[in-house]
Length: 394
Image 1: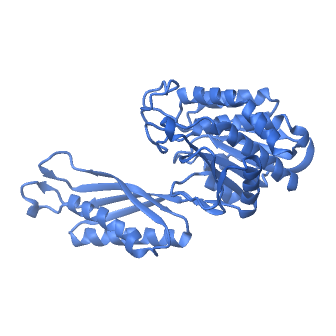
Image 2 (image 1 turned 30 degrees about the vertical axis):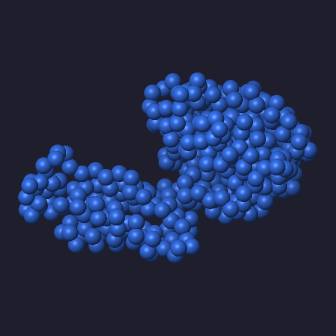
């Protein structure tokens, strides 16, 4: 199919994409509470004549678009949930729900998904096989992908490949990040409890201070990346919470640290987790305390299949000859698209969405996050073209 036709069709529904996105932005819903969002999605998909299932993993939606010619099955996935952040961007379509905000672009993802469904529905005669459309709840660290998989979304029909996109506000509109191999990091939740013996703040010699031990643990954990890891490798250890004590003149009995570990390779992951435990235990013991370390896996890395990624890059270049198609972008951010790509070969693309001249540059999970809505038809065209191409060549 002529890629310019798909691009024109996506651009023609740009106003509708923006309207969907702004409505969803004004009414954000956090993970597994996306009832209004899911109702809108299901209604739009049913209006296209698609077979739609709702209530999957509580609020997930799955639709099947059957082409008019036989072929394989391609799965397209979008996430729907917002974040517990008070919006400060001041846009006319700002969230009407205090303390909730679409600060990661998932409102745009849902709009893109609905746009792709509309474009592909108008080309059923050219679609070989089946397109499975997944609208997922609870991506933001809540295990939504795993719950959808447990509910059977990778069955009946079983997908042969999978695609997804993420709006990427650290790059401008006109940029695409479509790399091979790991593109987003795996993530662990790090929790450390340091136990000492409390006492009067004026008599520290009579106590065993877990706060001092916690402070030294935070500093020492940074040496794992700087001194235990090959400088050519990549990992992140971030302590993001420290909780200890209730008042100014009492040394507490315990201090609790929480944070995250991010890695790409399994061997680096194992080394970092081992050293976190060793460093924490050693410092705590040296200062007369004891430590308990708990590491909870959240997501594996997002790993793109080179063959599928090559098809998506070709689609991007065919649609947008002047675009920057970056084959090397990787991020330490995690994404539970990783669980789908563990089971099915696929490609997760990053799509530049920032327009800094209009003040739309804040990164994801920021209270002033916004993106350039001109990216919406570009992402629709990319996924529609890549879908038709992959199904045609399967």
